[in-house]
Length: 366
Image 1 (cartoon, rainbow, N blue to C red):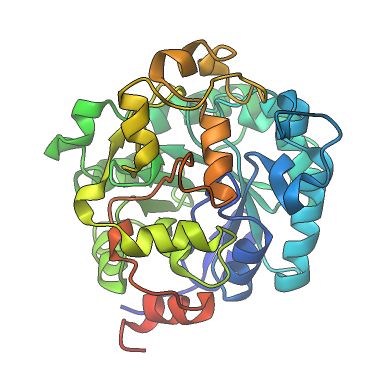
Image 2: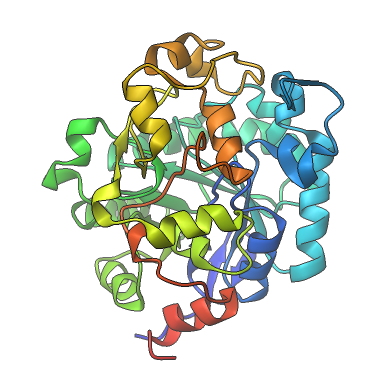
């Protein structure tokens, strides 16, 4: 199968590959810029931008962390991340990933558009009013992440009725992805909810809504053969996150990459999260401490996501997700939370983004 260029809204990708947005601090300027330069869609995570450049853009801190929502989702830092990425990829399409469950979603959405995002990808909830925030940005493609044809149907119906538009593309994320899942714990293990069983009905729903909506399959995709498999099932392309962690350009610290290189398949499991969804990551010393209720203090300095209810859910689960993800982004293996997809253990060495794209497009032996 030959991979051809693909249109997403008003933008064209050379290859039908989206790099998954990974926060805090895993896909920022270096990774997203390199992926876009190589012909796929590089995606900047809008989560925790206050930690960019060693928190140099943060004006208020507590306990060494960005104080409250405005500093955690730092506007100035977001602009700098896009500026630095553009130095790498020029005017090639560049996206942003924004969780719908965050506090201050409308403001962060506008910040990313004003900073230069060509596409906004949103999951962790149904973004029913996403087009409302894009009215001043007609060139920005809107891409919801969904986990079922029903979710797509609900989103499209609301968008058509209220905003007279449909998604420019959708990402169908199965339960083998890293980070938060759009499924219950039981569904993550149920064969009926695996990605290969979801593609056809979601593609059929997308075609019913508008024949120009491409569906990108995501979750557990690792090789060119995997990409071909899902495109043969009807997907127009794929989104891949975890495999890009194994690149030199990935913004994750070396300690994060070394942890994945050294982990085993049995180390990767579904975890509880204050966000309210199961989350896939690596079992580390942190998780063992949390299981014993001996984890680090929970202070809710950053007030990052709505479902956590200012730390109530964090205390119930046993850790603050903002603090623990930011520790991972800063290379703290003792207290960091390290998200990864189910195939993270397959990273055995680092390669360049350009070489990885070649392997995905032409085969592993390139």
